[in-house]
Length: 286
Image: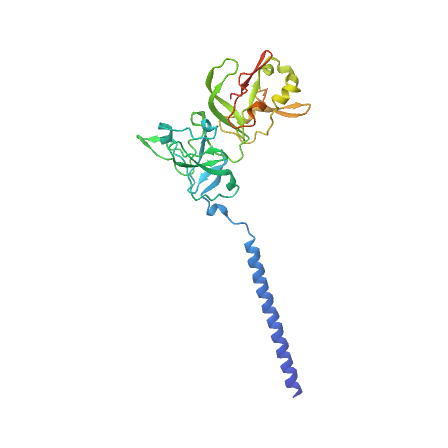
């Protein structure tokens, strides 16, 4: 009888150990499940707008099929001005079910209607387009992965999320002469116009002191690292001017400035043609 009791006790002990081991396995399985849920989701799998990368272009926006998206420098004021024949070659991009991929922020996308009432998706204030050049008399959208629209007319470029500088094109009035003419000029990533000062051309040996004090209050020195540029701009054209109060970006050896009178508003170029003594301020033409 004593042996039976011992055997029974051992069986009960083994049963308890078995339950404990089983419980540990279940807890481990649940824990593993929780760890799996902490893995960042692959947003690109469901994205309707995402980033792709090539060795020559870097990262730029594409739709869910991989079709390249472009911006038009003439849209600098924040409205689609590609109409008529332009609209046939550059169809608008509109995504009603916007899902952004890895590296993109949904808050950067908006929707506005064109002048004709069509909805169009915008990115950081820029209307988005496809490229559909004429082939045998028909406009055919380029294939996924193609970037043949880059640099067309020096006014069409792929849409990058990290542009340091961009290009803008619009009619600009010269404040000195009152004449208005189209200009292609540099802007920063926020769409603010960049300027050159005539005195810097006249006195290249004193760049750091040509605009100081009150001049700098009206015309703040501009600096950014030129790491991401439209293809028509060359990184080698940019340099750095060390000033007593910081750095300033040089373009082809000339310092770049903002104009306080533009009120940091994208597309404004109200400083073009203004004079400071014998010297004139102009938009920074590439």
